[in-house]
Amino acid sequence: HSVKYTAIYLFFIRISKKSPKRTQHLLPDHVQLFLRVLHIEKQNQNPLFREYLASGYYPFGSDPEFEIELGQVIMRTLEVDIPQFANMNAATGRKLKRLMALISTMAPFKPSMASIAGKIEVSRNNLEDYFMFMEKAGMIARLRQSGSSINLLGKVEKVYLDNPNILMNLGDE
Image (cartoon, rainbow, N blue to C red):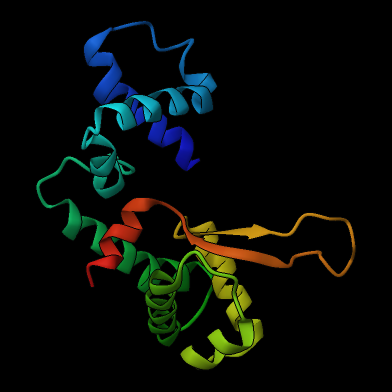
């Protein structure tokens, strides 16, 4: 999804100002559009791509208080929304927050569940649930190994923050 949103953001900010066109036929091919815009951005050394990385993913990215608002969204998601949705207690919210802080310093990374579980003081089973709920909430993304072997089923190869705005926001802390 991030590639699509990046392409749309850059298209409307950069391309549409220069040559307004009908966007309906361009947006479905977001990968090609993204590559075209990225090529233009690299040629022009335009700061718009860096602007997107900092504030272009969310619809409220142009708000003057965006960084504060995004920080509040992240904290509310971790401390209130996920625990409430998953019928977890309030202490779980604090553990999710610690897990997110840990992920933000390591992402992208290949997770060692035992090591991470030890660092945030939870069981490996609970940790897998935390990852699942954080992924469903759009906080992180997990890349799984491809293959059909039963040993590979569900094996996580990499963990990423879901979008660059979260990375930029948590990177400041």
